[in-house]
Image (cartoon, rainbow, N blue to C red):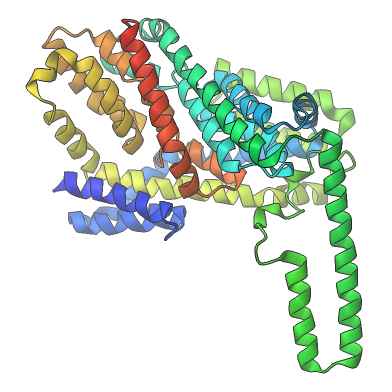
Length: 484
């Protein structure tokens, strides 16, 4: 029964958010609470939630202050040269921009932290996608898939978990997998090429000057339209009746916003000012200080000098104090990024309810046992292949901790009984990571969709198929090369 309810809970969640019947935050909270009652453990819901929140609290703190930090770096112009350099080099070519997204995400993923990767990638690429009216789902899908392949680095998490669970050396697991992972990353670039080609056919190719000139024309037209509307409204208020005034006000609202307008296109989005060389938050005299601070912060993360949440708390406080020494300016900057902070941190704490119930009620363990027990006896000699296939759904529906510490040892034991090396099982367990990075149980994905202002359901519909294909290509390459 726990198995059925576990799969039903996950399926209900995915269907509701993909059909946009519920917001992700509401679904992450209400659906597990309801299923907790169905399981008969409603009285323990509070314990499960508190435990889940406690486990994810450091992650939420890290994300909150990391968003503030990178938001400040956008404000002061740290990423402006990157944005302008990419746009000038690509000549506003959507094809090259999508490939650049994959390349940037792959490079930044070397730090081993998905949240940081997504924040830097979105911060640099978001203005380009918005200025050119490119699909933001393409950006999130390509970035998530590229990061998923690179997430297999020994310091990224999954490889270390596999090594710990099976008492193996992380290098023995990862190094032989490099050729197969390289094939997977190559596929991501091929995918980016074709997605970029589709965007190029839809939008065409512009130059940087064209983009900025169109921006200026649009702003001028909106200003003129606003002024005309005000004059019409003034005339109507002088000569018309009360009803006329109401109609004029409604017309003004329609002209200013438009019923078909995307709220994400609002001019007050701070990230859309990345190409504005005259924005008041720029700090050109502090550019090298901010660059050095960012490099030091990332180095400290990789070297593990301090816990990541502590590093971002210190970094955000220092960046805010140095760049904006006046209290009103500091309050204004924090307010400018409050929307992203609340959105992402809210998602993380809501996800804590989901994972807390899933694990606390025993549904995760029951689901894993059911899947493992369902493996035919004749598949014993092929347990590495089985592990590779199972890593796709299991790492999507479970946390990495649950899979690597709960399921992988069982799979390795079953394989050992048929002469399959634990190293092969461990390597095969890594292939599901491209799909895992878009799981609703991964806090980093909420950073990605939150900062990109993409609906989680839209991202899921777009990325799942491509991430699954990437994982299968890595598995196939590993088998053909004799790695798995």
